[in-house]
Structures are given as structure tokens and as C-alpha cells.
Length: 170
Ligand SMILES: CC(C)(COP(=O)(O)OP(=O)(O)OC[C@H]1O[C@@H](n2cnc3c(N)ncnc32)[C@H](O)[C@@H]1OP(=O)(O)O)[C@@H](O)C(=O)NCCC(=O)NCCS
Image 1 (tube, rainbow, N blue to C red):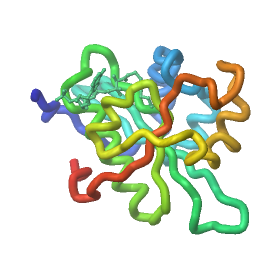
Image 2 (cartoon, helix red, strand yellow):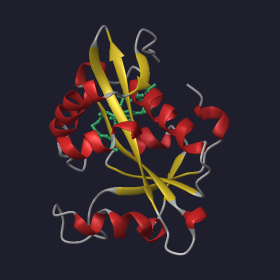
Image 3 (cartoon, protein in one colour):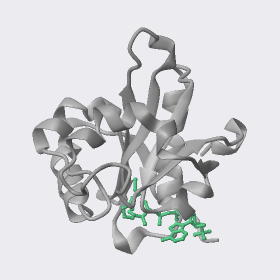
């Protein structure tokens, strides 16, 4: 396996917002679209991978609260995208691992992803679960999506992190 050792993963800054916007937009078949304004509002939740000043990828997270039970909030890994030329070099894994490290610091009960890339998330300790296990996400995100008839027929796969935390170190 080739690793992208020369690629640095770091917290995003406002200067990265336009490049994140372009990258997410280019992958709109696989990712929920995000406006530039929404990315700016959420910039503190983004990580970027950079190689010689070029953005190689990005990843972020979103918190889904549970009514009446704050400690039961689920956290979703979102907006994971790697530029085509940087794929299969470990960049996506490093980005998600950085997001996971940040997420674990506030102790969510559930970490989830809805994805068209289940093999990728599978290598990171996620397993497929029924969509009924990610109802937070369906109520706060999917319910507003216009891509499919309803969340239960949407082809995205729901996954939950069941991995060993120690394995998600960069
Ligand atoms: C999914 C995506 C983020 C993976 O990024 P990446 O940098 O290529 O992933 P990595 O190199 O870190 O892959 C880690 C492991 O995941 C698996 N994997 C990654 N992409 C895969 C694919 N397309 N098919 C099967 N397995 C894959 C492999 O096991 C890989 O390890 P290997 O290279 O040693 O075989 C990238 O393909 C992408 O941007 N896709 C479009 C957007 C998207 O689907 N995002 C995910 C939805 S949230």
C-alpha cells in the first residue's frame, strides 16, 4: 500500500473554503452539496490534506442532537473527498482519522457515515447498519435532501463506527 507521507493533514482555515467548496461540488454525485456560506460557517469542523500548496482532500463532521438526551448525540462523518490524482494513497484514511480523533474528544455515543464508498469506510472500522439506526441523520439531514424519493430507498449505505479506537491514529 502506498502512503501519502508528503501530504499534510491539518485543520481548515477560511482561506481553504473556496477550494473545499469546489472539491465537494465536483463530487456532488457522492456527497451532499454544500454552499460556500455553509462551508464558511462550518470551517472549524473541516480538515484538509495539502501537498505543496495544493488541496488534496477534505473531510468534516456534523453533530446530530437527540431531543431530551444531549449525551446521545450522533456524529456523522461528512464531506469526505479526495482529488482523483491523490486517491488510493491513504489521504482519505488520514483525513477521516483526523476527524475521528477530534470527534472522540467530545465522546459521542455513535459515529456514523452515509456513503457510496462502504469499502473505504469498512477499512476504517465502520460496519453497515440498517438506516433505522441512524434516525438522527435522517431527521436532520436526509429529510431535506431532494436527490431521492425517500431516505429508505436512497442507495447510500448507513454505517456505524465499531472499530478499535487505537487503529484510527494517523
Ligand atoms: C472515498 C474516497 C474519499 C477515498 O479516498 P482515498 O484517499 O482514495 O482513500 P484511501 O487511499 O485512504 O483508502 C483507504 C482504503 O480504503 C479502501 N478504498 C478506498 N477507495 C476505495 C474504492 N473506490 N473501492 C474500494 N475500496 C476503496 C481501500 O482498502 C484503501 O486501501 P488500499 O488503497 O490500501 O487498498 C475517494 O475515493 C473519494 O473522494 N470519492 C468520492 C467522494 C466520496 O465518495 N466520499 C465518501 C462519501 S462520504
